Amino acid sequence: MARIAYNNRMPIRVLSDNIASQIAAGEVIERPASVIKELVENALDAGAGNITVNVEGGGRALMRVADDGAGIPAAEVELAFARHATSKLQSADDLNHVQTLGFRGEALASIASVSQVSIITRSPAETAGVQARLEGGALLSQIPIGAPQGTVISVENLFYNVPARLKFLKSETAERSHISALFTRYAIAYPAVRFKLVLDNRTHFQSSGSGDVREVLAAVYGVEVARQLIELGGSYDAPPPTAPPPDDDDALFLHDRAVRDSIVVRGFISPPALNRSNRKEITLFVNGRWVQDIRLSTAVLQAYHTMLMVGRYPIAVVLLNVPPEDVDVNVHPAKSEVRFRYADAAFSAVERAVRKTLTAHAPIPHFAPRQWSLGGEARGGQPAFQTDWGAFAAPAAPPAPLSQPLDAAQPEAAPLAEPTPSGQQPLPAADVPLLRVIGQVGAAYIVAEGPDGLYLVDQHAAHERVLYEAYRLQRAAAQIVSQALLEPVAVEVAPGAAALLEGQIEALQRIGFSLEPFGGNTFLVRSLPTILGPVDPVRAVRVVVEDFEEDETLLAAEVEARLIARVCKRAAVKAGQVLSPAEQVELIRQLEKCVSPRTCPHGRPTMIHLSVDAVERQFGRKG
Ligand code: ADP
Ligand code: MG
Image (cartoon, rainbow, N blue to C red; front, side, top):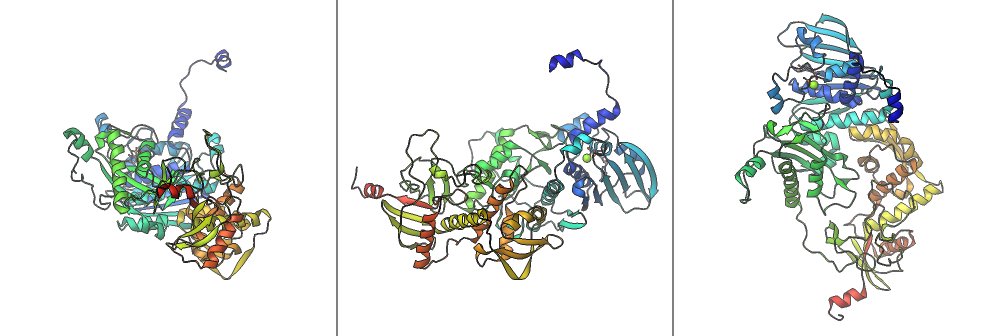
């Protein structure tokens, strides 16, 4: 390769402005959502109280961002589109303590070089506004025009002159959900600003700008999720954040303490029981800027250590405020990465804040019955996850994380039945012996006797497994039975979910749901899979979207398996539900017939086993 290139070597030339600016633009504007990000950040920098975004065709056809901020004086409009032209930095030193979201003066130039742009803007000092149009970076026209204070920038035909980029754009649905994710997160970080997102002429998301962040969370995640989110120690609403009072940790040196106290962490996190199959719902803002930072998201995850199953992730919106001089925002043209001067302090500030909140919210139980084993020999002393009962020993193989396609390669391979990598131990067969039901405890577990001791069956997990296998059998036989509702029911879902749900209508149809778009974020449900029994259609539909992500690498069958697992989870009997003796027996009989009775479809155990041997040891009858 290198040799061929060398033989065909061309003389060195300076790239034309046109090529140079397209290359530079490529670093800032990767996809439609990057345009929205830059324009929304500009609006926020301009002090806007209202930001309205219109998107058509997944952003390729049109993106329009309107704000009521400071506007651009007529004389500066052309300059605003020049590369490295900014009103936010005066001197090189300013780079050391950037207080605005923008500062590189590249966004408008980049956007204009890869699209057709028009702008209408008026600053409060001027009586008339300006309208200008640009194409491929060149100014086509500029005329005075009457306009309200603020700025409206329309970006049409993105990448019309960069075919290579166009090729890499994902589906409209995917681009829409990127835009929605970005937009809604900014709305959370700026609750006092009114955000509105219109997708293809439908209002997709709206916040009131009241300053009440819970209200925004409800609009983004849905009321139910928002209600459960826990506020991190510091107060979210107190602007600007002040340092927390120093706490008991006297061992810190003064300097370290000063660094630590200069970092303020605010935000919301989910209780461990509310979790997701991917880490995309961990949102981080540093000084008002949405950033991707693996270390900080690891800090969040670490705080949940042992509280979450392998492969499950919390929902978190964490806002970090650090003195501007302690963070370098100039790492990448897209400004989505930052570098901390005191990276360890930032990490531990986040970890501590999350951990403290979690501990205060749900103290970790002390009772850890290690002698209880998972369906056979005791193995592994490491607690894998916490339940209300305490820490259970980890199964030899970790439960299949949901982010892996369920049953992808080996259908119904039970995590417990897989050989350990080290292979030291013969594992018991994956089925369950015939059990004699003794009764129910705590309205959550069924106690049963087997040939080798006592079994405690989690009724919810067990029922999930039973429903899941029955459902999949029906599906495999193409015999999904669907029950029409007496009357169609309208279900409204969170804005982020609506686009995804729309993309899954056919998949849902195949598994017995029939629904259709009904305007806005509302869908009409006409029928539900019979196997679910009498479930509330609203909840049944919400549950299929609540944890859904668009992952284009998933095969249709995997998407289906996930949907089915999710629906079964919701349809299964809950802990707290009293079962009649007949129902208990029936559930155990059905579980015995399952191919993988030992785990629920999400990989959690359905039962734990206390062997006669272990009991005898506990009572001191045996060595
Ligand atoms: P940067 O934000 O890094 O300064 P941009 O290319 O995004 O660079 O914008 C260039 C300049 O145009 C900004 O510095 C600002 O003065 C002006 N500008 C851009 N968008 C707006 C807006 N929505 N309202 C007011 N001024 C704006
Ligand atoms: Mg900018």
